[in-house]
Length: 276
Length: 289
Image (cartoon, rainbow over all chains, first blue to last red; front, side, top):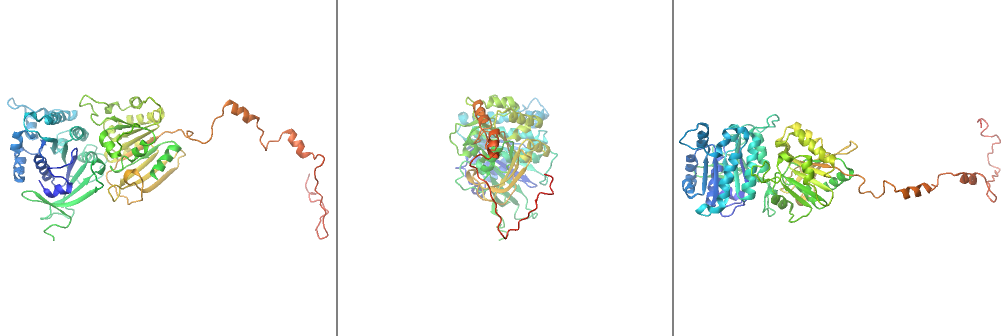
């Protein structure tokens, strides 16, 4: 969890805005450190967290979280964290074995054209029961984290279907359950006006940008590689979706960052300690 | 100024397209509409709560929200409105109210519909809504960057006014570019209007393009609705009108009275003085009179 990012987004584990849809994007860069940040942030905030890990194994996430000071295994045992391990589950759908039971969440792999209704129903069923506290501890508002949605495109799902999925997640988690949603999506290519491609990651990115309330866009430095500054983050808060604006609302802020072994530091442009 | 322009659009009849490129000012149009007439909002992208928060409206009887946000595809099996029911008949039924006041339909957004319904179908529905008279005006929002240029063009051709709004320098500020097509075929453009908080236009600001959205308005009005004079006559009025003799109309009596000088009428007598250059010759001699 990065305290500097918290102050940029005006949030802390004790008090954060509910009902937000945070979109994390990267272009020719890696924004997964922000996903780790949000995972630790919401676990610390005692939220019920559903994590759709489609690109990495649980081991990976738990070792990174360990460094950030949060134990995923413990959270999972307590019932605070529900982890969908996409890599493992997709294997059991693609290569069915008697010993392993395939999760209904990954049913879309059988027929990607049918859409992500099964995945959404998995999300809804896991998070709707959160308020009851299912016998254990009482947890805060539900949170859905997805790492990352653009992988679904590679699995044969259309961008429109992913947008439908994200819309339903927003309607259910943000609006109905007053929780938060964090989604990561990546675009590899250069930013361009592609007219012909209706189903690419660019279209997904644009669609999600229209849905989200906070957009964090990670990109490399325009001047090229630097050892002390790893890139820049553009944080854009969509004011009219913000409930408590208090008249203070900036359209977008640009920060540079450096990822450390344990955490990351954020600073205004040109104020890196290596420069000053 | 924008509100004025919209009002002008209403008065002159025809179509109005509004193109918006920011989330901030997406709802300024609702804001001015809500105060005047019945507004039906077909919300796909924003929940009712969020919409009313954005509008800073707590309770408005004339604002009807049709919830297509919670379950637009019927995945939850308790859906008030699904995207596949997007056709003129359904929408007309949706907008039916006990008192037949002029209604405005706001579609938020057409992008959502266009993702699931084919473009020609959407265009036909919009056209039917306009012709059918169920809604006096249809306002639609379209994220232009999410569709191919052809789709945007086809929907755009249905409307009469495009307002492109892009974010300005400050958070609450936006720049609007208005292109209005009048019925006569005249195209009016106005650029550089900035809309401050609450949808009230303030001062012009620099144009910064960001996330493009389109907001369309299709206006269908009766131009004779608010005239200060009558266009048609009742029978008694027509009778009275026919009886009236206009001052420049010559009846026979009037003509004779004017031409024949009666007793007591005057005559012009001209007596030239010494210096007067009086020509004895008839000046009209050469004329064949």
